[in-house]
Image (cartoon, rainbow, N blue to C red; front, side, top):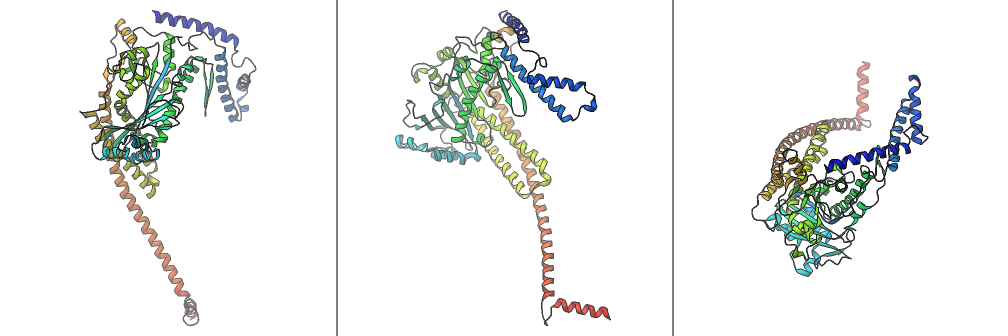
Length: 560
């Protein structure tokens, strides 16, 4: 009943606000603003006989101008709307605050990107400080062992600390890190002989961990969002709060992804695909596992952060924390794909976590270290979904381009297609076996964590209250394993068909090239014969050319 009363009150207040807005902002065409003039001209044009409605281009342009005016009119209405209307404004509870703890970015290195990882190790000189101080083996030795033999399951690739950071890391490389972050840990994980993953852990500076909270609690005014080639979008104060808050998160994500793409580029960077990213957000008031339905203000605050709080994933290894995948349709300020969020109530999640004392006093930052240790292997498995997505897209693109351009194929374009499919085939063949073994491995040194898809407890209780069966939970890891192996098998089958077709096309192409070469050789022979005849006829034997003698002889025969 509390939820329905809350909604009814909000609707009543919005109706009253609508009446005030209509009195304050005249309808389109009832005043003399620029879009009112366009509307009046359009109304007048409809009254003209059809023979005068020329040129049509002008009338179409006028219609587009009127449609543009409606966006500006809606923008003006948004400014006139009541600041207290809960349906058009974001009211963050005063006790609610959010803190960024850390984020993780994953990059993959199949056989086609092995040279890129080696180049990154040399270019960034990550071995220098670590080997000089601690005498560790070089990254290149670790990488070679993991590719040639079983090797180690993981090793610390590098630690990069900001020059102004007081973090204790004697083997770290000191440099200026991107603004939000005080340090970056890179860990290489051995998936198989043909696949290495690098998981980067970005730790936020104390001064930057509250950036998202500051924007969330800040004032939000209506915005007019211009889009290239599209009608502008008029955001009211509520949707402006959504977009502005999510843009702060997106900027942090873009910064981490850009750093990874520049300093350690791999498969995703090569194919212009956003790397898999997970960030950890802790809230002071809200919890994904609360028993009471969240109020409207709490729901809108969660949505402004770009979090899904109805259906999510949970793990017994990370109590009081929920894993949510970003829905691009619900996050206008976060357009990037492959983004996940681990979130929960700060005090509840810190209190429920085990062995945080090894990181000092139990705290949010100790929880961040605890989470990073547990989720690394899971994130690698999660990133394989993105790898398969990209591979499917590449095969589809190659197939479509071959279908469109097969009539105009040249030897050069055929070689390019063959090289692309060969690269994909080598990566796919190697990774298929690696993924199978990685999922089925028994002895592991990296923690394994499992997630299950569940319904928010308050929603599950509402289902039971109304006699409905709750949505059953299911094991996300097992589902992911099954789907990955199935999709890889389908890709292998498609790859075999593509390679067979490519061999046929290559054979036909070789025949066509041989035919073309034969025709060119024939024309070259004819040209050579013509040149030889001309040379013979031009030769001088008796003081005059042979051609002249032949001509005189022919004239003599004709005269007889």
